[in-house]
Amino acid sequence: MTRLQRAFTAVRLVNAQREVRVPMGRMRGLAAFAIEKLRIRAPGMIEITFLGKQAMRRLNRRHKRHDWVTDVLSFRYDGDATAPTTVGEILIAPSQARAYARKAGLNETQELGRYVVHGLLHWLGYEDRTEREQRLMRKREDRLLRGFGL
Image 1: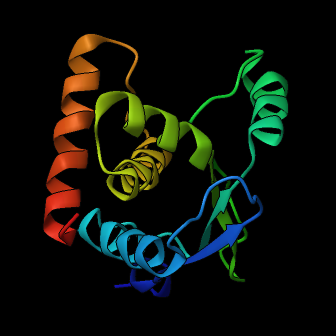
Image 2: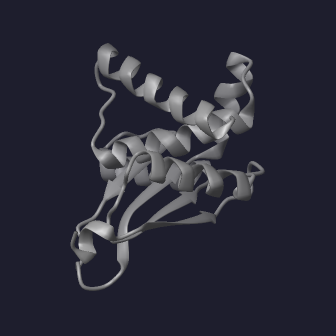
């Protein structure tokens, strides 16, 4: 087994918004749990940032050419294998999780946790463009959330 294969993927969370309270410890624990269960072994760090609505809308417009607030954006980067680096970013709009949870009668923390897991699955390459892909992604999300106790 090479050094690269043994590499542990670290996670860093940043709350860059004030619209919604984010249980950072719980989300950090969930992200670490999901990274382990998904066997993510990239040599570096995945940064998860919680953003306000306006910032998320700007980034969605810039990167996806969609002029609306989205819930999750996920980016995967190729890093230098000789030095730890950021291998990915997951951007999450907690306001979207809160709005959806309230509309659907769900727990806000669970919905926010779903966005963390959803972003990690996208980082791995899972898509949710078709109904079938959406069902499979939802199944994976549910399994991870249950395993973590959310």
